[in-house]
Image (tube, rainbow, N blue to C red; front, top):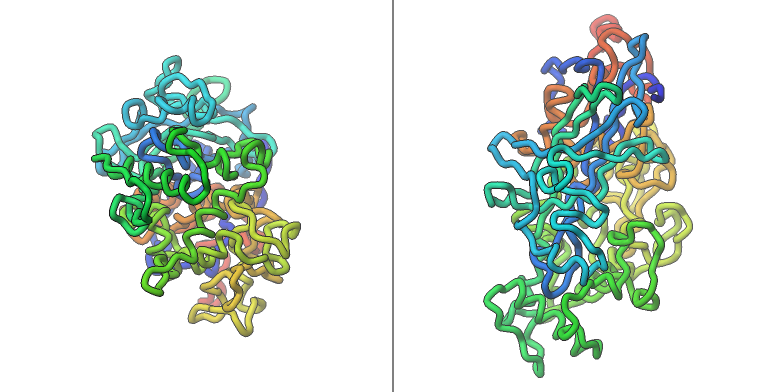
Length: 509
């Protein structure tokens, strides 16, 4: 176990939180730590995509990630991070308030019919690419599945849950709940739990343009497909168009793994970098964003610079995967990521634009050189970024665009005042803050930062469980025993105790 210092984490967006109009006011009394053990958990990305069918080509397999930390209390009542010596951590299926539950994936996808051809993986039915199962699919251990402890990160991880967006009632639910439970290592007794969203969608469709007769399937000299399933039809059309433009023979090589030739970090589980046929070819992100970005019809961009264009390929007009505090605050994908050509790396990054400084002056690296919390949360009322080219909200403190206006590369801004910054050279989803607790565990997943505007959303369940209302975790008593804290300004981001009468002085508190 590892000691925590002072207050419960609230990392990356505290005082200047986006979309606070839908956040709880703190008037609800938060629940005290249950049985002295608190489970904190979150999905890593806020959305994982997978192909609806795998017979023609595949972009992404069923693969989801949940990270968790468990906080116990020592003999003095001080919070400590528990590790694999202290607890076992598991994930299991649980119904949401509407009765939707997702416990198995067998029969919900054709992934296992093509996994060997696509990924060279000999899997038993129901097994994910990393050996994980849905709770009801594991032939040797039906029920809650174990999460591995990652010593280097100091958290528990389920890396590669093969979940689909179809629940056990055959209804679509891109935001199913899983229950993460902590168990005493010696007795096996459950000592803590938290329900979290494990988001997944198949709304990564190409048929909006590439269905036969669509704007992406009009080139002469190509025999366009006529399959009744428009998803299959569109995928076949894409391979035929690729063959015509690139002199390949993909239509006779199905199923095709796109990342087999166009490197994608999302499928590079070991972080080895491009290899084999990927060497010398542009990345998958580069070809997708770089090819589609300049396309025009009747002199106008086919994909306007707004969220509707992103939702043509990313989930989606129905799924609405960008649903967190930034969305509530009026920002969309482009305010953080930049336009399609910027995302595709068509422009070189400015100084400080790469996550670790090693790629400044070069095209951005997909999945790595991404926007940061500090790019908009640039400081506090005393010290923050200001000046020409910066777009701020009404307060003048928080920015609503993560890069300078006129910067085609959309290089993320760096804050001099690091009060709300991530760890150095580290993305939000990998960062830890106060007491070594993950930023996402108290702010919510990337793209789903608390609070979600729909108070009844499954995404808000975890925050409500922890502190009694939706919104980023701000109640010290989520992790700290009531009354155990001295007056301090050593909380998250230098915050003082919250809802503590000790701070009241002559009616000012």
